[in-house]
Image (cartoon, rainbow, N blue to C red; front, top):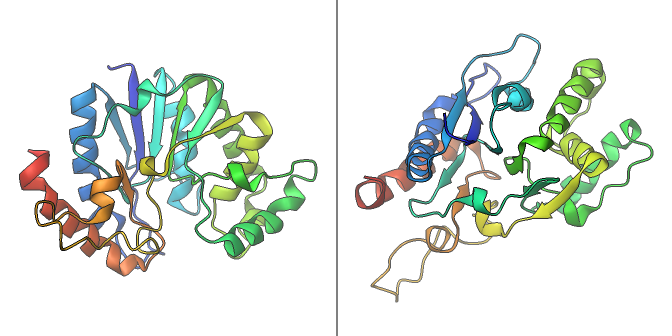
Length: 249
């Protein structure tokens, strides 16, 4: 066993239009390469928990699955890590959770915070420390946050699932993070979200020596979210096919 790990949930659900495994295979392939390079264990949770209506809540089980590791990363299975990305755990220190600011849609964010505020009447969310929950890094001392959130979810499951819109887990997790610990913001290159809104699927055709799309050149970790899920399989497959023979071998 290595001292650090990456934790990912890869559990299909009947409520999704797309089988998560259809695109997770490309995510897993890149994370296997990354973890092998940096002596990191990759933990992939494929076991449904009957307590959860939606697979996303299996992320909170990281406090059990990764309890024996010094440093932990939680990544969604719609992420891909670049072939030459450095070891992120060299940046990670105790007493805080590391993530990337998520301001992709401020109307969505503010509505999501508002709709869950009654659970946390004494906690004010700092939107400039609101992180995307799909990629997080921390030391072992922060795993208690996920245990607290899971207990809260199970105690309030019915009321939580009545809320329409604003995601399922992300805003609740941000409340718990800001209530119980410190946030350390990472550079966007460690969780490049809303790639399409940034026009980073394109490239500069004049740079003939490097035809890679902008997102490949300027970010370590690519997060394929924010657009139609029907496009995710194709885009992740094309990304992996483009890079695999050149870089991941």
